[in-house]
Length: 271
Image (cartoon, rainbow, N blue to C red; front, side, top):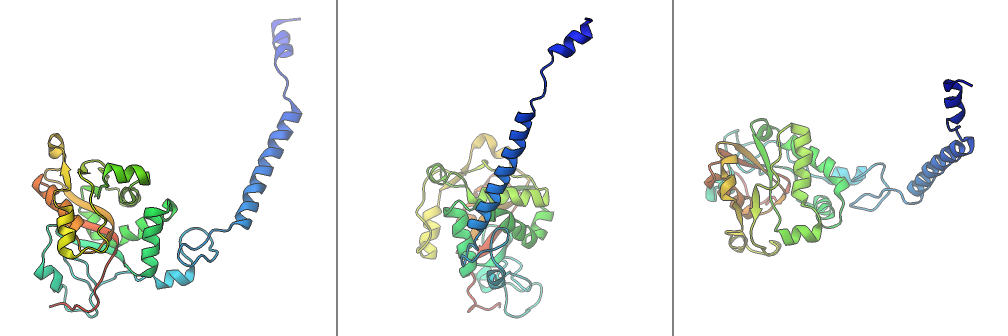
């Protein structure tokens, strides 16, 4: 018997039973996943009705109030009528922020609030792709001129308890959509702050004063660059304003803000 015959004789034979078992096991696994999907369908995060895919059902989708023009060119606050392309809101004139422009995908209404809370507190990171895409659309003009995205950071203790920063998750989605890179750890929250919910505008500003910094050895990474700050919600703007001031002190060329939702006071008109 020659060497080739020996090698053929010594080669292990395919086990038909093993192959059949693997095929059967794969089929059973797929069947189990299908059965689980049927038994536990994906629910709308807002109304808990079954929904195909992830996120919100068609009825709740219609309740999301997307922010479209006309809006304040500085703060992105929607106007009830078109006052002209250069007309600022009362807020922009009375309290101009450190950042240049702010844009939001939706108003912070009931459905938007449920989405934000689910992403932030309930580990619903599966909502981030849709939310991030809506943000990228709303912030097109900001992203076209941007050099870098910077998510508003959490203090390390809060980040440890939540296991992720919702602003960082959204920033990665927007980066994939826009091609603008993310610098997730450049800006740091160096002291824990109280939850901003329930605080007055003055208390919100005081709460975040001195809470953010950039390490001295890293300030060169931001000099001359156009930054878009990413966050989930804009209420008074105190947090993003504090972040913008730190970035501008580090010689960033410009700071804009892009959020998923913003609080809108419909009683105020442009002037």
